[in-house]
Image: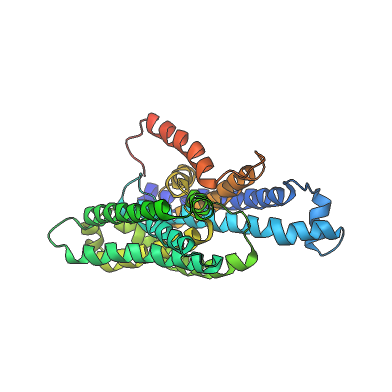
Length: 340
């Protein structure tokens, strides 16, 4: 019993230590990202601009260009990583990502339809959000009608089906789109980008991400229990079906919100939770903030590279795949039997 008591007391300490360190690193990365770009800034210029002093040109660059983009990268990275950690715990599968239920495919279809109809940017983002939520809504609705099968497996298979249908509809719209105007915009959006992002674009997504994160934080103990299986959850008095529905709705809201903002950005929600799990362990109470912080920093670094490594901006989806795929191969090559 003494051993168990010691373990219970010592468990929170690594998580809190890592969370604090990750937060400090994230602040440093954000400050560095504001400095880096075609119009380079010194630390003194950044401080002065943040205080509304100094060079007028530096103030415009910091407040109108760099800060909105840095904020968007932090928000999108944190949201996707948090959603990925949630889905992996919920479905008890380390290869699950935030688009497992078709939210990214649905959001992509909504955005492509908006571009095809020549809608304004705000309407395109709204279409992407509605498309992502609708895709998961269809999965959940059809899943509720299917009886006498494994609930988790049914949802995953339905997510694959809905994602495939949304992908087919997206391909059809790409074929029908204007090849000189609409098709490049569609292709660039589907690869993910934070180019031309403004504070006005971030404001609608931020509260929805916070609303989605709140139930995940409050239900962290129940999510831990659900990761053990439905029978264990019922034995502890937890209504697995209702809790799973709330968690899926919250994670989907987060994913759809940032996908509407940045386009389809893959690999963040798949890879980052693994890194966080290595640092703080599988406990969801520590895993959620660690994943969010690492995801925010990761996408900030990737976005900084995307806008600086070439004369033409590289889509985020390309870089996240180039970095994420080798990491996943390395993770599999380690031969770990357990992922939690």
